[in-house]
Length: 160
Image (cartoon, rainbow, N blue to C red; front, side, top):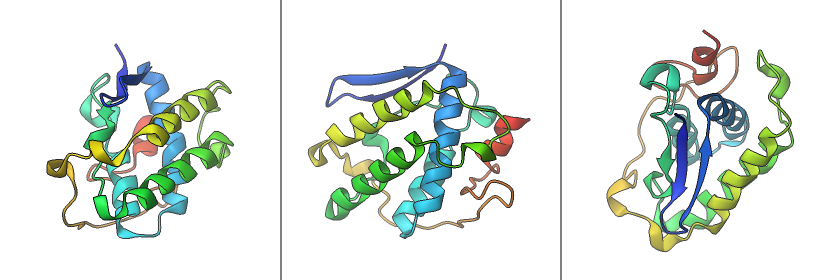
């Protein structure tokens, strides 16, 4: 089993084991949450953390890039936010805050995810998937300082 992160537009995908998926989400959540400033950025971090295998089951949390709630009028800024988070995460940002040491090869998976984001184009946005209004409660986990979803902190959930 495992999870696919894909772009049909690019005909590219990143296939990760369930463990690799958990590490990708954990490491990116640290960076996304630390750098989120706008409502969209906070909502994206929260949405990314919602891909929580502990809650939804292993092998069920992959997604297509066009499922991201891209907004056409700020697509470039949103893309740059994600790419910055990828760059920071690939430099092992706050990995010491995890209760495990991610394997060094994880940086390659993080960069591969970033390359797909980099190549993704605005023309692939599905307006039906856009977050037309951003609402919600944005709460940081007191232990990991990442945006929590409805069922808690994805990092805390992965530790149980």
